[in-house]
Length: 111
Image (tube, rainbow, N blue to C red):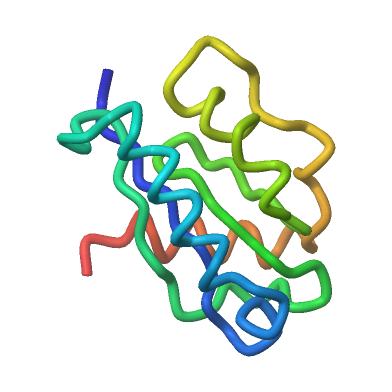
């Protein structure tokens, strides 16, 4: 299994809606199950451009784009990341397809 990277947006709208606290809670939940970060690392990201559906969280290289994420959603997301659960479908598909594609292009870039 390759290592996954989880990015939590910290753009203006996401920050106003609590992305900083959400990042800390996600990190806490992941480290409790993967203390060496062998499977998943969580990082902050400047802005994804999906401000109208904040808080946004992406999973790379799986290319899962979650929107309107709340702290209550985190256990389910973590189970997807570290367990056998499927992606949390109710949190996907909210951003415009071109915004999502731009994010994947940036993350795929070697720069």
